[in-house]
Image (cartoon, rainbow, N blue to C red; front, side, top):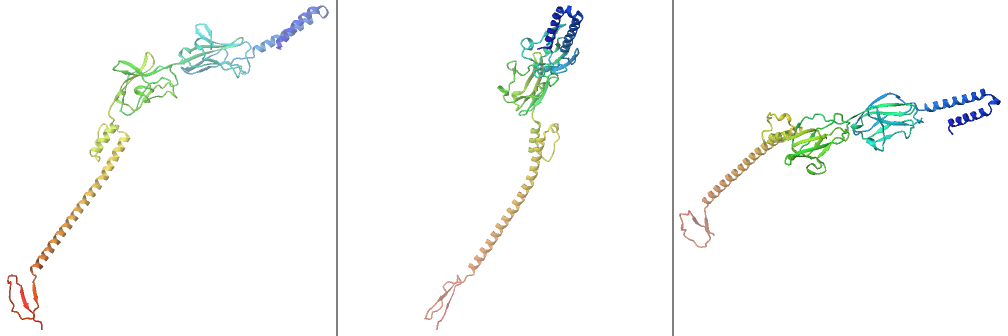
Length: 381
């Protein structure tokens, strides 16, 4: 039972007893008892009412938050385990001196506000989620018979920076980043879109990575920085050229145009291979040559320098081999001619002789003087 109830019962009993025994005991004893009990009631009442002492009581705090995020409005007792006996409320200043009680069941704060006093009864702070610019203003944490704390909340929204039209030069097959951001990268805009102008239909069409011309080729960078709304387009084609715009509000846009030009690194590499690789031709595009183009040019020059000596060696070897084969053929021809002459001379000098064996003597007769044939008779004893 509450001690105040006990004291109240004792006080009333003393009154009754005082009336009945006023004659026997005297009025002064009863009055002293009643005064003591009254003092006890007053002391206990003041002690209970002072159980929660607000931190920053009667002060005004300033807090800054961002759209789309959350904010904690602080209000708590010095002793977080002390529960206010008289109750407390959170209010929002609508205009002037008019204050409206905040409720999570209706109004602009429906399902967006939450108290955090579940574990600590003396923590009366209020959490507001999914902030909008309309949530900015003055708030009040009021504890009856104790005091209040005033808080001024500023909610920053997204106002696009650098609204001037921009032109970006890109290369077919490459990638391009279209810039668009809020002044504070931690700001989460209520909504934004990227669109491209269709010149044939004279209208703006929303860009989507899930369908259409930009399927699996576009990417946003607002994962870690909600205020970074830039768009990356990869594997560019000629159809990607044109005018784009980024918008967070109906009347606020950033316009970006994409123009294409020939990749200087590729053109320079082709010239270096087809012309004279050993001679560097200064041009305005040499300063913009990429490291890949330079490496390719150096590799082509090195291969060219290696190919020329090999080709010369093959040519010299071919000449020597041809001369060697020609010499062999000449020697063979001369040897054949000499052999033919010797054979002809041997045939001209041949003398034919006929040996006739006969037992009778025979007078030698010359048959053919023209052939220089000599016949002789050989006698056999």
